[in-house]
Amino acid sequence: MVLSKEDLLCHSRWIRDHLAPKIAKDGSSADGKNPYDLAPLRSALDELLESPMTLDILRFSRMEKALQRIVGANRGDWPPDIVLKAKHLVGRWENSFGPLQRVRTDLWATGGRLEGFAKPRGWFKWEGAFSQKSLEAPAWIAQEKRGRAETYKEGHCGFKVGEWWLNSAAACKDGIVDNLHYRITTDNRVAYAITMTQGKESNVSTDGRSSYTPYANDPGAVKLMATIGGEQRSTVRVLRSWRLRSSLAPVAGLRYDGLYRVTGYGVKLMPGSDDSQDTWRYTFHLEREKGQESMEKVLGIPMPDQLDDWEDYRAGPMYSPEEEGTEQVGEGVDERKRRYTIGEDTGGRLGSIDSGYFSSHPSALKEEVQSP
Image (cartoon, rainbow, N blue to C red; front, side, top):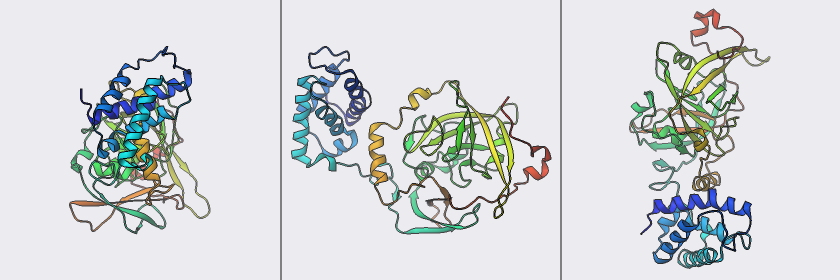
């Protein structure tokens, strides 16, 4: 049986994420008394020994990294026949492609995680709509891959729970969220998605409940409150970033964790300092919809190959520690393209802007409340 590059990727993930850590923990298996079924691995290695390898397949599958885990393991951890085959394959591939540590996926090429983005040149300066000072950020120019109409619909909209991106600009380009309203995707009626970047998620429970406190004065917060109204509460897509303070946050990048309902919210007026205005702090109480991919499986993402891309991305010129900062869609861009900018907003305080909700709803000026 000829293994496809997708098959090899599955084998690579299995070795790196599951098999190698377990064997390293359980100790020697050189006597053949291994509690794990290694027949699929032996079959895959035999197939690789009989098949030619291309650089494209190697870049896609990351199989060389999986075999290097076997070759570099402690002596006796793996059966000798598997180690011998892995060494032979690694040597063959090094003779063909050079040092394997140089084998990298081009993030910008077709099929790469930044496909469709033009490599940023220079920096783009803009006046933040909700910041008291101008910000400079690397500019991202992208040809949209999906229709933006999908962004403003309820439901998964064609996205699978567990999908993963390097940053929120890439997720925005694919259409699962927008970046017109900071981190809450809305139209003129309700909210459709929450991008949990910075901020805090607390009261996380095993039944899918949690509480999320986003940035103060996020203009989408009022529309998120509107999802509670009516006989049928709307669902929102929830994406979590590695920078979110939460036990559910991914170790890297941005991950789609499925559909949630807003079951309640609290609002608290936070007094400002001498040189800043008062701000509103929102806390939203969320509950995950039933019948989706379990969070136990979702928490396994990013996979090892995705972490490879993350490390390459972090080593690139466009990465900064404040990567998941302020985002805006630039103006004056060709209608078929949009400009995504990412920069840090930690130095400026968000202004206190009344959307009209609080001025017309005096009862909203209350201390934060717990969900029922």
